[in-house]
Image (cartoon, rainbow, N blue to C red; front, side):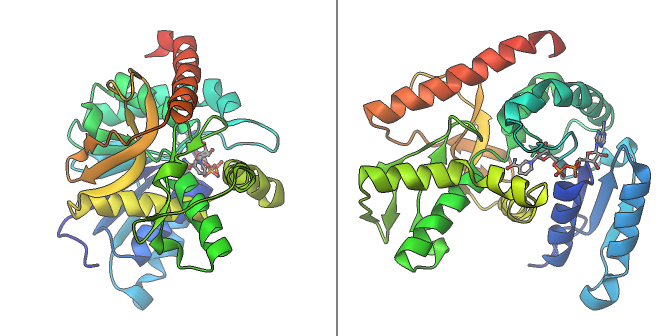
Length: 309
Ligand SMILES: NC(=O)c1ccc[n+]([C@@H]2O[C@H](COP(=O)([O-])OP(=O)(O)OC[C@H]3O[C@@H](n4cnc5c(N)ncnc54)[C@H](O)[C@@H]3O)[C@@H](O)[C@H]2O)c1
């Protein structure tokens, strides 16, 4: 895809996720200007320089380390800064650490722009997205979390392996928390519009493997970054191309099956305005109950950080 003229993307946090996302956006030509901001300025500088040496192979894009004043005029600001999940640590364990980090980041961003779309990847992503929305004063449609897009991709991949199919042709949805209380909407799982049936045992196994995927990868190599980079690229593309794509991102719930005032992953229409609309997909009683439990868990976590918002 050709970059739209003058597309500026800022990435705050050039760690494994941020730098892999920058490289993915670079390879796919999504921006004319990519700015890396990190607390560790040397790391951002080194990444930018390394990527600059790729230009003779892929053509020119401006990639450089920067600071918050570079947020002025940005189309999208991706936030992937913070502490990463340690082996055995839940995403919610990260909460307090990352709230402290986000106070400074969000306050700095809003000094320079009120017009960007803020795309949050840092975990616990639903809480950090809500925090970013509240603290920034941005409208909810322009603060988007990566939500359960990655989890949904993981489920689609697992089903595709089982059925020996292209994962892009498998339709399935993980909703709720990007974390332990997420759930699969089995009634919406389909191939070519035809409902896919799974036994209870199969559903249990697919759900467990999806939910625990990150723990397995972190145990094996310390962190996950390739698939999340492509998930973020998918959201960026839906925004920049004004696609109206349906993606399971984290957004503010307003009477979503009776759930309110939390950010959670649900199917959303994503376009140049950010989240244009939340799709109130049907859920059976069991799914509604589990989704509400996920929302309740988020609300409790949010209450514990109320004083910082
Ligand atoms: N949403 C998802 O699906 C998903 C998937 C994978 C990882 N993550 C999350 O993404 C985050 C980043 O993970 P990672 O593996 O890249 O971690 P990392 O430790 O490699 O990178 C984090 C970066 O943030 C920087 N940083 C810390 N404080 C900062 C500040 N105040 N300002 C600017 N930069 C700061 C650090 O210097 C570091 O470079 C984690 O919270 C992780 O859990 C989310």
